Length: 185
Image 1: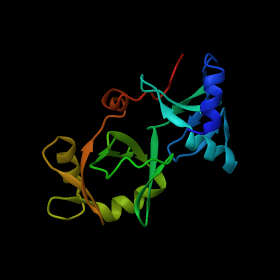
Image 2: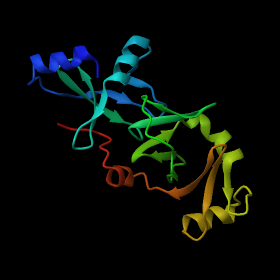
Image 3: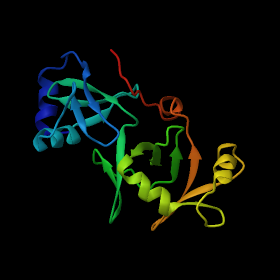
């Protein structure tokens, strides 16, 4: 966190938290109420001062005040770049070890115990080129059915290696990863 933020915490330790104002969408964009934030300095401040409390709620430390963040899908968003995955807000949890797909077609990756949703603008390229069954072929409709039933393995094949693809019920994100998507006081 910024030194200025840490100093304000020491000076004013009991400022009430704020809920219901800030949201991180499934493309890694910040929203204040219903307005998308485009100011680079504010977005960068949020990125640097983004954290998780002991209850699984994510927040931005704004001076002495915690501003809790509603999450559309997960606490992080990832995009593919030339060097691999780019996590938003910036963290480096290590190499992804697992890919997950929910019933709504959202793709997630897990690395270092952290969960990120893949920016939906990446999905077409990933699904057409990189989803494969054990024989290395794109999955057929029958393969998808067998995968959902747990009788067939699918993989997300990337230049840096393959990730096993597992189903994830959207309702299980909170329980499985200890993430509060809609924090409340």
